[in-house]
Image 1 (tube, rainbow, N blue to C red):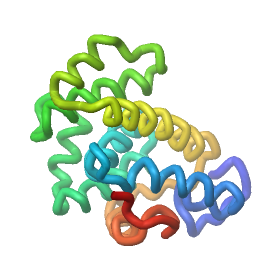
Image 2 (image 1 turned 30 degrees about the vertical axis):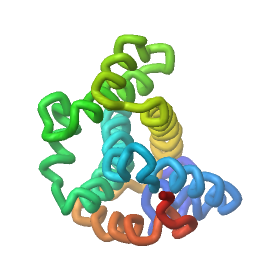
Image 3 (image 1 turned 90 degrees about the vertical axis):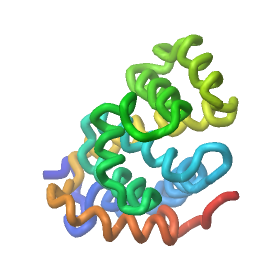
Length: 183
């Protein structure tokens, strides 16, 4: 049961954005800017970072919504998404993304947990300064999003089949339909 009066027909973040439309625009713009770009990291990689941080934060809603979005970008490869969550070091992803997921996990613990060695490993695997920047910001933003969703006890569907239809909408139209793909 949500801690505040939310539309029970809207799950997770969607109910919060409906509750505070004045916040919906800026948060949607932030999500679109961080996640709907292929500048450096792909949109699939960006969503996998958000999914992994949401998993670490035990945010069921965000983990499964962004996992479904990542799967859309990965030709419905839910097995890969689940492998990244369970054991990214042995998942079929690039060494660069593995190193960046390590950075994201440290950000999830606290910003000062990121080490020079992690950054050196990421850069040796091909990460640019922009990739590192975006990884840290995506991880930090997901910590905020996860705490926003769970801190207000939003409605969280447990039926995993409810996530792919919304994921397709986000892939096609962005977060809140606000912004197209950034090149």
